[in-house]
Image (cartoon, rainbow, N blue to C red; front, side, top):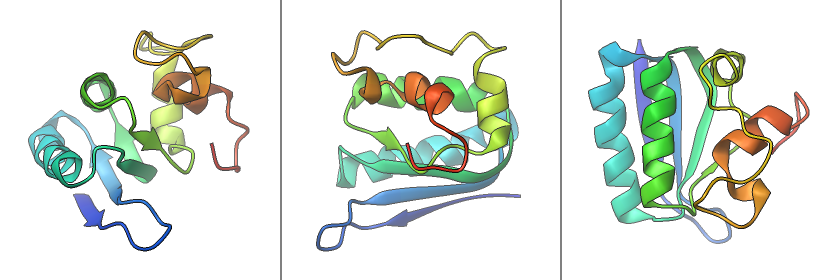
Length: 121
């Protein structure tokens, strides 16, 4: 099962897309559509992948493409172990920022790999 829930910005809280379940190729179109709609509403969208139970390369590719198009997006809190465990073997782990940001904390994969487990990025 897979779900994406858009939560609009409110007061000081940014807009968020909560992603849960199986973020795999079988659900990537649904994920992409939710992500595109969320980014239309809020370019600095926060994506919560903490409840993703299964992920594959298509999930990482979609998040990376979204970041390329909208560098202000963030993954908060720390992605689930299903995503973290996929980052390094799939070649997404980074020791420094990507070309979309001069701040290493802005790169999705630097933050996801270096953040202490159990704490917010």
